Structure formats: structure tokens, C-alpha cells
Length: 623
Image: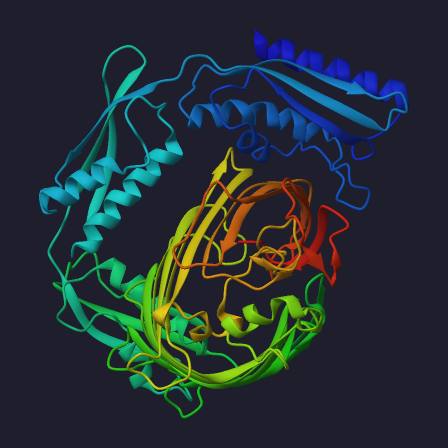
């Protein structure tokens, strides 16, 4: 009966629309789409499954128009959507299609009765004895479909695929997994995953095709397996990632050539690649509130000596920094997991409180065992000269402080050679480098300068950072960051730390209520940097229509002059809103930061601070 009543109402509404405006399908915009009664499924997922969609309020964005046939089909799609998610009794109880006074827009309201779902009573795994007990438990505990949840068909398929892949990663490429359901009481089912592992297999011969200027040896050394190793699907994926990591191939595919009927114990593998351009020139121009106008040009060769070596030269200019850099990367050093990197630069930076010139380079040994983890150890050697702002130099009351910082009190300069050993370790599980919405990143950095090395400066430093991203209801992203660090000067002499290596906070990617490097210990109102710091941020990111989005942020932090001297009662706070627009190179970002507790006596451009807010425009998320 409900289906016939819905069809009748649909005919009445369609007739009313024709009488009201004599318009045809495609003329009336959908200005609103509302679901009532939707509590146990994702409204956004339901809306995305329909052809009838709400248009955007932004004038130049895509408009959506009402189509009667599509709407009638959507009524059936809604019930099918619910059935696939374990709600067999869900129905569209009623709907309302309301025209506006101008009869050119319509609001659609759907009232849905969800009913009671059929739930998973238990999940039983049979035939998985070939997996170690701990792997069996981990697999069972991480299946997408969980007990007490509705019997969601998509999660059921995903659970089968995960179980199948667990067997294939353990050496059983011909494994099969079937799914069955057994009655387990009123509105409850027991889900059974039944495995047929097949034979234990090993990798066979590897056939490489498609290469031209890149040698076959380069391709083979990126593979994480060799003939005779136990078959593992994960090795195929890791090897493919390794090939793409060379940045030499537009296409790289690794596939087993097994015959399921024969179930061979040796699985031959085919590697197919398609080479891309090896020499590139990249240019870019842009604008940001800190760098202002900027320009960049880079030339690079991605197969410099025929062994996938990468070399490049880059030049950049902006009001903040400028110079030339050259770099070289040997991708295979001792093993496919390790690379050796060299870079050199002649660089000049003009920060708000000081300027610095650097000439030198570094060598880095990098080890990356998988896509999420890597560590590097490096040796830095560079000559630097720093000069503080003229306004500070003219202030004779801070003469003694300039001397303590290693600056010539008459010229405001310091110079010397920095030689240091560095160690970095990182774990990154985020889903995007440009705009992460889930996962986390933790990183640590330790540096020792001087001591048993040559060079003018003598100190050691340590910093640690953590970031976390989570998305709620497939839309709202919650992003958090915390960073701490300290520098210890040998003998307590601050002159052993170069001026440009001291900590400063504030700016478009730091505490956004202040300008770049404004948050720091002061001398007569002038920021001089510190040896300890804490900073953090929490941000809510919400996409709107099209490529637009909004954000709200809360930033905090401070810098202290002495080593390991952190006082959490003495933090600076800033809040504000932001606007985002997605671009291919990351979101264009406009933020307005407001100081909750201004810094007393701060000088900006030699004058007392006149406002408690800052405007920031940049490309890329703040973190």
C-alpha cells in the first residue's frame, strides 16, 4: 500500500508543478534536500547515492535541477541503500516537493522510517589455521564488520577482502574465502568466513618489461623480494611503491602470473614500466603575506648517470629569502631502502628581526623501511653571517646583551662556521602530504654542533613534534599539533649558538595572532630569540561548496631565553577564523588571528604594536 500511495502523491505533485508554471524537468533548481528520520546511517553517504542533489548557493557553482524520473528512481534507491546496510524494513514514508513563489526553485523533503536492523551476532573464521595464532587474532579484531553492528554488505565484502589478503600475504596466492550467514536469533545473523588456503607458494622468475634508458638492474634492485622468497602480496605493493619513488616512471605495475587452476608452488611475476620525462624545468610564482611576491625556477634530471641518480639546481627570490641551491641524490646506497643525498646552497634570508647569509652544504644518509617510517643521519658544514635589525643596533641599552649573544655591538654582526651532526626520525600515517584529514605524524630531531667537530659554534639541540588528524561524519576535520624544543649552549655561553638558530614563533604557520618571529624574549621591545620553546595548535576544518572551506583555530606557545626553561603558565594564545580554497598544490589559506594576551612592550618595525590581530595569506595548511 505505501508504494501505491507514494506513486499517487508523485503524480499529484508533478501535475501541480505543471499547472503552476508549465515548466518541464530541468528548468527548476533544487535549492534544498532534507532527510527526516535518518539516524542510523550517514546522511552524506545517503545523499551521495541519489541522483537528486541539492545545488550550491555560490553564484558561479554548478546548479542542480529537478528531474521527476530520477526522483522516482531515488525513492527505490533509498530503500536499496538501507537494505545494503542491514535495514530491510526501511521505507520512504512520505515526501514533500515545495516550489518557491517564483516557481523556479524547489525544496525536497523526505521522511524516512528506518526500522530495526538485522545485526551481526558473531563472526566466525574457519580454515585460517595456516596463519599464526597472533595473525588470526589480529585479523579477527580488525575486520571492518564488527559484532553488534548492522549487517552492512559493503563492510561484509571489505571483511572478506581483508581475510583474503591476509592469506595472500602469508604465502597463499590461490586462497579463496567465502561468506555465509546463519540464523542466530531474532533479527541476528552469524557471519562465517570460510577459507580454502590452497598451496604454500614462493616467488618464481621475474620478467621486467617496458624499460628503455633506465637499466633493468635499477628496476630489479627496487624489488623487495627475489625468486625463492615466500610469496607475499605486500611485497608486490611495496616494490611498486619503491619504483614510483624513483620518479622515473609514469606507470609501474607488478602482477603475479599464477594459474589458479594449476596452483603452482612457484609464482612468476611480471614487472611492467613506462618511463616518463627525465629532464624537467619547473617554474612558479606566488604571493604570501610573509614572503610577499615570490618566484622560483628549478631544473632537474632524474636519471643523471643512468642509475636513477637525481640532480637539480633551484633558484628562488622573495622579500623573505633568496638564493641558489643544488642537490644530488643517489637512490640506491648499500640497499634499496637507503639513499645518499648531497645539497649545497648560497642563501640569504631577511627575517623581521635579523638577516643571515649562508654558504655551505650537507650530506644525508636516509633509510626508509616502509612508506610510513624513515630516519636520516646527516653532516652539515656551512659558513654563516648574521646581522640584527638596525633599530636594535641603535639602542645602546642592550649593548651587553648583544655581546652575550655573540654579536659585535658596533656592527650587530656575528659570523662563523657551523659544523654539526644531525639525526631525524619520522613516522607518518597521514593520508595526504598537502591536506591531511586522518592519521598522525610524529617526528624527532637531535643535533650536535662543535664539540669533537670543527667549527665556531658549540651546542646541541632537540625538538619533537606530533600531529593528529581525524574526520567526523566525513566532513569535519579536527587537526592538532604540538611541538617542543630546546638548545643547550656549551658552558652556558649563548654566543655558542648562532643567532639564526635560536627559536622564534609567530606567523602564518605558527601563533597566528602575531607576525613572523614576534613571539620571543624581548630586549627593549626587540625580539632576540630563545633557547626553549613550546607551540601548539588545534584547528577545525570544514568544506563548504565546491572547493571552498572554512576553518577555526586556537594557537598557543611561547619562547624562553634559557635552555630547558618552559613555563606553561606563561603561554601566548591566539584564535581566529580562516577561509580555504583547494588548489592542485594545496589549499590557498586566508587566516585572521587575534591575540588573547598581547606581549607587553613588543616593537613591530621599531614602533609599539598598534593592533592585536594579524592577516595571513599563504598556500598550504598551517600544519
